[in-house]
Image (cartoon, rainbow, N blue to C red; front, side):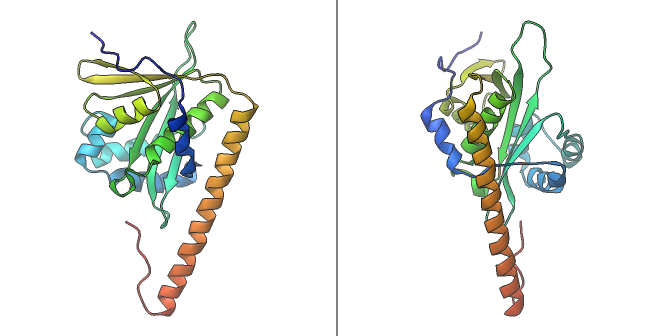
Length: 219
């Protein structure tokens, strides 16, 4: 029997606060960064992200199969341009009589946790979903994935448990002019932030070379 943890399932103000973290929409050119990010997840993190034990070869297959024309992928980069957090927004098949829906999956590397990155990725995915006529955002994960459950409840999602798994739902209001502007502003801010980090990293690498020190290496 389902155990409903939250009745409210529309976006809340604390949820929208995560937009302060810059989040970029990724494309096929980021495939290597996505692969590197997922391979850095340890065994337990992979189990929580994909719901099962996930060896390297499965991650390679998953990344190779990403269709950026069909789904949307978002990422947050640290100061060294490492992909510290990423989210996959997969559009579910549309069936007659049912609302258009998308499934959200997210992972954040240990160094990026507790900084609002997961919240920002979910907020970015929700706005993008509204602007693409998605009416319901869906998350499926293991019931003991406390980080995902916390994120879902913080977003005002309705959470249901059944047989060791958890499903969370967020009903999205229709898009409006402000959501279009919000998404465009978020993308511009994320691109600007990335350009600044890229320039700073390039400058640091040049100074490291000039001073005879090894350049900063990404993890």
